[in-house]
Image (cartoon, rainbow, N blue to C red; front, side, top):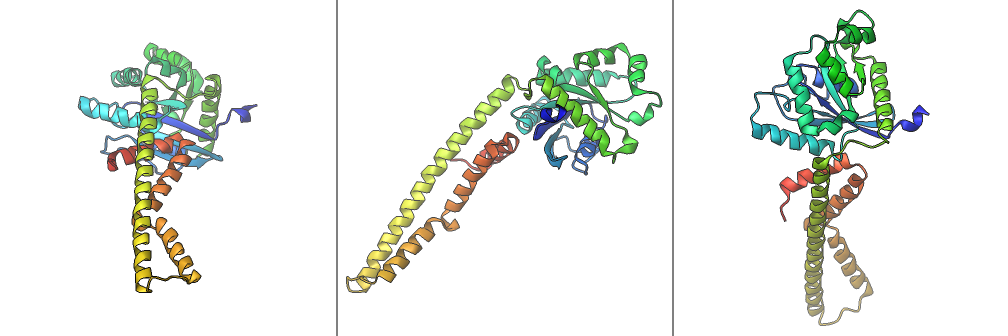
Length: 304
């Protein structure tokens, strides 16, 4: 039964205050140095890997919970995070370091609610790092040692949590167990990923932009085809004049047609690039997380 809950792809977003181990957790999940831990950059980033015969996408959000960032910078990173995880994450992993629940961690939790909305708690799981520091049974530790504020956070997250032992970062079983818990949460949510008004607006905007780009490139393709056809017709007329107004050689006609149709698919006329772009769009529509990145890049680089 558990197998039926497994999705071929999962989108995970790591949230939490700086220094809790978000990047390291992302590296543990993906099984490689995908994110730079303790990096000076405050930009959101996304990496994915094929794990256990599934595609796992992870978005790291190092700057979203940095209180020193300007409001404009935070808004820009929020937009980036939403783009990278559209049409919505299957799981929001709130990363908390084992130990006393600090005021900064409390503020980070509030920030999660502000960015994703209260409805996101159904899709949230607490990911404790440095579980190796707890010598006793972790379940007992949570019940007896965690304060009322952390208990409230756990309650909001439906008492869902997982523990990473940093001394066993190469132990893939702890990653497999995490994904199994995420699968159960996704199943409890009807198999759907998290979405809200913001995600829906982003998805609608991307669809509109994709339509505009398609229309632009179809028009450009037609113009280039007409241009090549016109040039070939002029060349054919010139050939007829040089040959004294006669061109009865069928081989010559066939060669001219071959050149004409070859030119239609020449990179020289940007036609191949356009078709390649549409192929990418069609493939990416099936995997919207890559579709978002593709369109985002073309939105910033291509201006009809």
